[in-house]
Amino acid sequence: MKRIDVTRNWQGSRLDRFVRAHIPGTPFGVIQILLRKGLIYLNGERASGAARVKGGDVVSIDIAESDEASPPPATKPKRGPGKRAVKPPAGEAAAAGKTLRPAAAIGREIRVLHEDDEVLVIDKPAGVVVQPGNRAERGSLLDSLEEYRRRSARTRARGRATSAGDSPPGTIEEPPFPYTPVHRLDRDTSGALVVAKTRPAARALTRAFARRGVHKIYLAVVEGVPAEEEGTIDSPVAVAKGARSHASPSPAGAKAITHYSTIRKLRGGRALLRITIETGRTHQIRAHLASIGHPVAGDAEYGAAPAGRSGRFLLHAWMIYFPHPSTGEMLLCTAPPPADIPAA
Image (cartoon, rainbow, N blue to C red; front, side):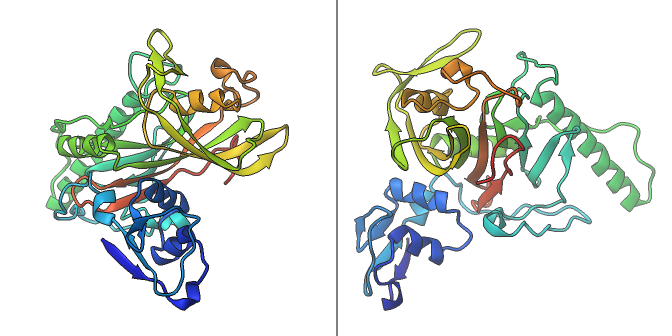
C-alpha cells in the first residue's frame, strides 16, 4: 500500500489529479481504472476521482492488489550479448519499461513496440487476422510471428557463432515454443497486442488477463456525440457464434462493463472517445457503443454507416498496461493512432 500525505498546497484539488502528480509516468486513464476498481482511498475510504482533497488528508493506493496478477518478482530478464536498453519515448510511453532492442518490424508493416526475452508487444495493423484458419489476403498474424521467430533465431545463432570465432552452423535448433498472442483483437481493430515468447510467459500473462491485472485503453471514432461527456455501460453481453460472431446486450449474457469519455467532437457529427473495459467479451466495445446509439464509425455490422475510405471500423487499441511475466514490473506500451484515427 502506497501512502501519500496531502499538504496544504493541494487544498481543493481533485483526487485523480493529485494521484497523477504523485505517481508520474502513469497514464491518466490507468488512474481512472484504479479509482473505479476501488484501489485508491481517501482517508481510508474508497472515493471517486472528483473528490476534493485538503491539507492533512491521506491518500492510499493499493498497489499490491492492483498488481495482484503479477507473479512474485524474480530476476529481471538477462540481456543478450551486445544488447543495450533503448530509452523509451518521452511522455506517457516513458513508463513502458525496458526495451532490449531498437524498434523493429515484423514483415513490412507490423511495428514492434516492446521486446525482451519473454514478451513481444506489436502494433497490429487493421485488416490482419490474429488466428489462423480465418486467413485474409495478408495471411494470419501467426504466420508473420513464426517468420519473425525464425529470423530472430538465425540472427542469434550467427551472433553466437561470430563471438565464438566459428562460422554459422548449417542448422538451427528451433525454440520449442511458438510466439503466441495472449489476447485477441478483431481483424479490423488496430493497435497494441501482447505476444508471449515462452511457455512460462504465456501462462503468467494469461493469468494476468484472467485476474484483470491488465489494463487496456482504446480510441474509438463514433457516430454522433454522446450527451454525457463520460459514462459507463454496464450491460451483460451475449455472443452468437457462427461464421461471424455477433454480440448484443442481453440479460442472459455475460457481465460486461465499458467506460467511455469524450476526448473531442469531430467533423461530420462524430466524436473521438477514450474507452476502457473491465471485462473482455467478444465485440464488447462495438456492441456496447451501438446500444447507446453511438456505434463505432464504419461498423456496419453494428448499425453504423458503411466504412468509407479507410475500409474498416475506427477502433484502435491505444495503450496496454500489464505486469511483466517474470519481474512483475508494470509495462506500459502505446501504439500511436493510425492515419484514419485522430490523435488523442
